[in-house]
Structure formats: C-alpha cells, structure tokens
Image (cartoon, rainbow, N blue to C red):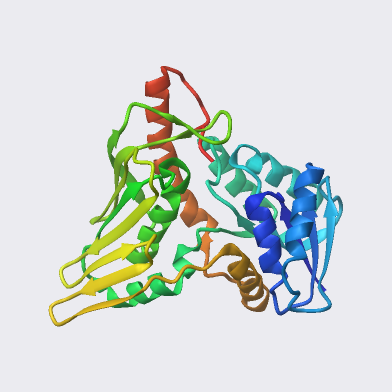
Length: 320
C-alpha cells in the first residue's frame, strides 16, 4: 500500500485529497491539519468524489506523524509555515517525494535552508504550478519554435498578482525551457491592497522579468472584474489566450486558428501526479531547485517594493 501524506486541509489541501482519491493505485492517505474544522471540510469534500481504487483509505489527524515512512507528501500549508513544517516533518519521518504548494516560502533564506534539508534527507521534490500540465499550454508549447526569442505578457485585473505571479513565471519557464530568471523592471503601484488574509498584501501595476533573451511582462490593474489575457509572440507565431472566456487564437505566416483553453482543476490533477511519481519516480511538475530559481527574483522584487511602500525592513514577503 502506497502511503500518502497531505499536510494542510484548507482550500487547496482538500482539493488535493479529492484528487488523490482519483489515483488508480491503492493509497493509504493521511491528512494533517491543526484545525478540526478544516479536517471536517476535507472529509466532506472527500465524500463528494468516488474513490477510483476501492482499497484506498483516508485518515485524519491534527498533528504531524512521527517515526513513519511516506511515499509522497503534499505540503499545502500557507507560505509562512511551510519551511518549518517541512523541517519538522523530515526530523521525525522518512519521505521519498514531496510536492510543495506555492508561493513556496516568504523568506529568501528558507529557499536555501529547505534545499539543504531535502538533500540531507535524500528527498526529491517538485512545486505545484499546474499550468504546464494543462493540455492547451502543452499544445501551445508544441507550436513554438524553441530556437526563437519569446515575448510573453500577462495582463488583466483582479488576478492576484502577488500570489499568482509565480504561476505565469513558471509557465514562461516551461515554454522557454529555461529557469535562470532575472527581474528587470518594477513599475508596481505604490498603493498596496490588503489581501483577504490578514497581514498579507496584493499588488497591482507592472513587473518585468527575463529568461536569457526571453521577456515576460506582468500587469494587473485595479479594476474589480477578473480578467486574464496571456499573449505570446515570436518571429513565427502570435498567440492570444483569454483564460476567462477560455479562447485561444494562434496566428503564423500561413494560417490563423482558434481553439479552446482547457483548464485542469486540482481535483483532476493530484491523482495523476501521484500515479506518475509512483510509477516513474519522476514528475511533470516543476523540479524544486528550478522553482527556487523562479521564485527568488520575484520574492526579492516584491519584498523590496513592499518595504519601500511601508517604509519597513521586513525579512519575509507578506504574500501567500
């Protein structure tokens, strides 16, 4: 029986649980969260889906296990406690593979500290930025010439720039096959928006990044409506994706075509991720070290901006 641990039973954690129950493999799943209310909600959501393998089981706990071995652990806590939870987990247990949620960590030092912990305990890890698993983005990647310079722009409003930038930075990395990100321009608005979570902030304005010669611009306005447009351009292709209406238009020298943007929800993906890891010892998700290369320039840029606006010297970036 494959042992799975899900730490964090909130919005994402409960969806990971639903997805894990879609695994074709027999799983012994343990869900951990200090909040009994969160565990109850996770249990309710688990009961809303059919279990793919009738031998799979789920148990719930308010505390981390001790002296146990797990094949796959999904760490779906909030960013402020993720590094500490990882350290506590590995101090007491043996884990083969970890899938981290994002934003990975708020403090820059935690990226190197957790990387060292994973190496010390011989853990292979990935970060859950799932757009690279969407069929439509995989199809788009096939259309792009890897030898051409790519310019990508994400624009719109209400898409949660602070907490969701990493999704598009990761997508950019996936399409370019590079991970050495550099932040090049900060035109973020000087007004910070208070997040739904107390003590966290959202950002609006523009930020620019580079991967080698490839460029990425992120823009989010203060309009209330949620709008997300992704545009890609190279010498031979122009591609426009509207993530809200679900339309993709591609154009090159010979033809223009339109097709549907296919979104995969977490409850559809986690079981596939677990199966891939257990069957192949690898994953199509972003390798941990690559994701750290993508996270840290973004965290540096956003932390510096927030400190300047607040006139503080925070060491942790208050986004999640």
